[in-house]
Image (tube, rainbow, N blue to C red; front, side, top):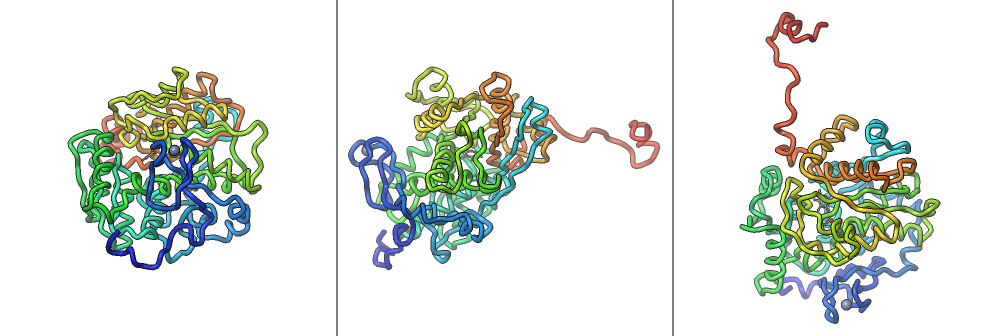
Length: 429
Ligand SMILES: *Cc1c(COP(=O)(O)O)cnc(C)c1O
Ligand SMILES: [Zn+2]
């Protein structure tokens, strides 16, 4: 990072609880730098914390914090000093009680929808981007980038605009208009690639090694360990919003599988540091994919954690990662907690978007349809206990994927502007 390397080092470690990067494969530790793979075994790296520093965080301190993810700064690898944050201040999104949805799918216990479409760029990606870019700026990077299935591009471009930092985001060329326009409007470079997300990701892994991209933080490549930690805030929030309780069951959409592993990590941390008691019988983690891209669920169903990559198809484009980096770790979390995974086809996804909308007032993007459809399947198959409290995560906004339901909904009546017209249509009895 030639341009800022001589600036005073504001590393994430300077004031935060993060201690090192540790290999998820072999456990080797590395300093808190811009590194994502292990030099020993090429396994992915994860942020490790000083347990004593985490244990100093109190409920009172969190509750007195800002109304966004930074209330959990004491549990994150960056952003302890507000002046260092590169952020749209996402988080504290609604946790919505959903009794009508519960009744419709045969759940006989409290059901909640955690609605992350309420974030500034309307998906959960604002959480991971805020943490990644805050760490990235501390590490001296001067340009922001990502390989995206859509929502990540949207969020990186918006964060860069707010921070006044140049951005370059890479997307598959066949993304929804709603994702392209909501990214391009922020004015950074937007590179559409003639290929799948997995092609985009491979190219970004090559670009990041070039001299020309030396100053560039790819949020989900070279600073991925910090990025991934942002997902923990969804788990913290659910626990806090339930009155410092962990629900018995959670249903989570999967692209790379990272979000699922980090919600589980958040619950584990909260119990370990004594902020929350584990529910009797623990919590169970369930994962949701689409039939067009189901390599993680298929591996679990086949009794293996060896993921066979697929070529994604179908309308749930934000989840279309055919070679999911955290797939094996998602399977581990699901098996350890006694949960399960399943997948839903495009018609089931469309039906679930409409079911969620008419029972809760939440209009989800296709990923939310995937998750609600899989919740239904898990109940029907007896995999998810209908008598236990459950949280289902809606991670994105329906307005970005209008085409999914555009042909299925519209005016229920079309009338002349007169009482006669209303009567003829049966609106006056
Ligand atoms: C990226 C994304 C996910 C899943 O993210 P992973 O951490 O890669 O599993 C879920 N929902 C939406 C809407 C997303 O954009
Ligand atoms: Zn290793």
